[in-house]
Image (tube, rainbow, N blue to C red):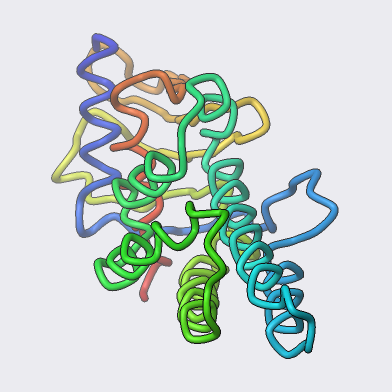
Length: 224
């Protein structure tokens, strides 16, 4: 089995609508951030309630930090944070990656894009309605992505239809975000690799990484 054939088989399993999770390893995404996204959002809401002259600027700044913190946390969990820093992705590029992974619904993406100008114009004094709208967008984004941040499935042992793929007998997938890679642990049972255990790794620089990760993220629990 060539590496390309193996990769095709692995992605085919991830993307198949009958593939499900038999068992998993679940844990929150670990970061070195001392202040979390929900902390910044709380700060923003308190700023908005204050009577300071600069309350709207402070509220907007903390709402921006909340959004940035959540996005960075997701990129860490998905093993793409180092690549993000290396390539110096801007905010729209980060959001586009999350969109490619199927993380953002069109509604949330539309709202984030709509408020991007407000985020980027640092020297404009926003009014109360603008800031409230932006805080609502950030709150919506956090609610939509918290399941990845706090109950991230870093490993999935998969059940798949062997009539669909006869090259692999078993497959376990690990998103090793600390080492920035996806690990496929498999047992092959075709004529060339019968009973052979193997490991295939993908790194974020690989064009197939985003596609494989998107397939991985969408797989549901067995029987759900």
